[in-house]
Length: 165
Image (tube, rainbow, N blue to C red; front, side):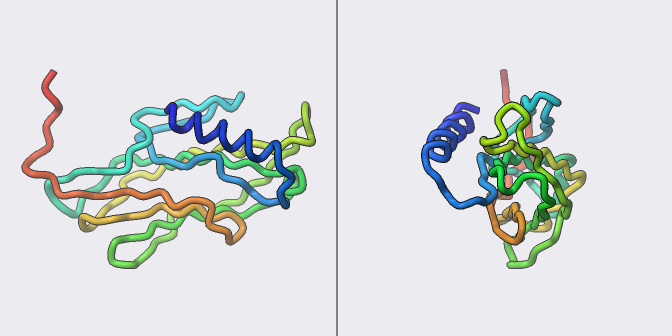
């Protein structure tokens, strides 16, 4: 969580001090077991920021996988619709479209000159991984890839057990 905060602070420092052409900016993207944003923009995460799943057998289904994404829309990109795509790249080169949706960032009422946050917690149920290997969740907004979140599926040695306490 500290790493996410540091990335966010670097983003804020860099983008508020420079005048860059209008576009959507990524603050962070990661996977979690569960996550939600509250109405006031706070993020609650359970089992977050992992990149490896172990399984003794394949195919294996992940009961719940949540992709957490925070974007910033510059004022020029607010009050208009944007297209979000989530693609799932597989080790064999194949891909699947997991989600397609549109969103419309709103200008901040308190500071219309600042970027507006777009908070997304996208839950996927029963996502199946057919073989061990490197998978990628791609976040695409308006045909521009903003994030490629890696997820490694590894063969576990024997059945998985809870760690001894």
